[in-house]
Amino acid sequence: MRSSTLRSTALLLGLLTSGISAQNAELTVLHGVPGLSGPVEVFANGGSLFTFDYGDQLGPLSLPAAGYAIDVRLNGVTILTANVNLAADTSYSAIAHLDAAGTPTISLFDNDDSALALPKSRLAIRHTAQAPAVDVVLQQNGATVATFGNLSNPNEVAADVAPGNYSASLFVANTTTRAFGPVDLALEDGYRYIVYAVGDVSGPSFRLLVQRTALTARVTVIHGIPGLPAPVDVFAGNTRLFSFDFGDSQGPLVLNPAQYALSVRLQGQTVLSANPTLAAGDDVTIVAHLDAAGTGNVLSIFANDVSSLTSGARLTVRHTAAAPAVDVALDALGNRVATIRNLSNGNEATAPVPSGLYAASLFAAGTTTRAFGPVALKPATGVHYLVHAIGDLNVGSFTLVVQTIDLAGAVPGSLTASVAGVSCGPTIAPSSAAIQFGEPFSLLIRGGDANAMGVINVGDSNTASGALSLPFSLAGAGAPGCFIATNFLASHPIMLDSNGAASASFVVPRLAFGLPAVYFQAASRTTGNALGLESTDVVELRQN
Image (cartoon, rainbow, N blue to C red; front, side):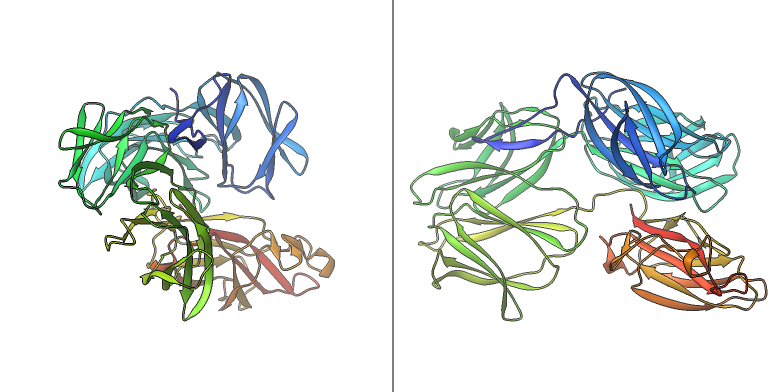
């Protein structure tokens, strides 16, 4: 099979062009081996590619078509090797994972990037976990829509399905014994989802990794020309897509990669046209609008930034109105928080902004003369807001059209909990590997000293705490094998019982959608070392 190429895009002279060198292959690499003492470094033919940790995925990398000796090293020592042959113009995924018996190995998969018969989503499930063969059951609204039988490590099943919301469960092959799930699957039109089962199905390390790739392009079209005597029709070739009027927005249209002859027709006559080449993964907005003087009509094509956000929102302002250059001002609680200067017709400016309530105004460039506003704008976390100024500022047709793009994407589940790092005594584990926003989950502490006091520390970094590099060994303080593995944002006290166990309940608020990774590590009193303190391994909570 062949897989989607995530090609780079550029906007040049009204044409979106993209491509991957016909001499290159694409490779995405995933880390599915739990329980290692630290990150691993990946080498190809002796050259270092990157360092990553359990659950991470890197790529796609563009590599010359050739044979490669893949070498995975932990603390400089090779722990896995594989020889792979990568063909030109083909996409692959390589995953380091456990085989069915729990031995680390590397598997290479070809990815199917053939055209979808829209509307469709492509779903592939890859068994790369320490687990026996399973049956995969896909349900929608409580009814079974597909069953994939006897999937064993390291194989896959795949199907093109209607976009929508599903639940998936794994059963021990040929039985009704549920091994995992159900987990929610929200599948978007035109996307491919590759779901990897990794870790040990009988323990807390089991989780799902998701590789989400657009196999199609998305196009939104905005009508920004006022005063026309009738609605306009938009055509792709000779196929009429839709009819709309000033201020209307249509889309996103989901289109297979190709070059398209687009035309805007008024009462049967072509008034504007363009021939964009759309590649898989492109997300564009096409605006039919006036030039700065208001005397000519223009068709502008903008590439939308759909890269993910770790926090806050993304704001783009596009000047597509009959108006001179403007300064865009953003105020919060009466204070100026951002200014975009000298934005002229046909151009745009983009900036990250914290989520919140703002007042947006336009001023004649370089002056304090307000041309428009203020208008309220309330960007939410994980969303790209694209504000298009259209119409004629001088004759009262001026208005704003706002387009929003959810950058979180639709992927299985909401949050995944996994265990990493090392323990020098007690262990910590989540009550479930799949956690939903707004629903309680527990962290379970086991193996500590009886009746000892302790604490669960919560952080958002496992690499640094201020100037301290993590994980930080406590051997020098009298606790060999113990580490500080997360920074401290909050702490939750615990008391271990007579068996050296404890549990604590937490809830991730629904408003936290888009949060970065969160780390939980417990520490408790002990008589087993000179420091009098021992630490657990770490639970990582990460949004899918």
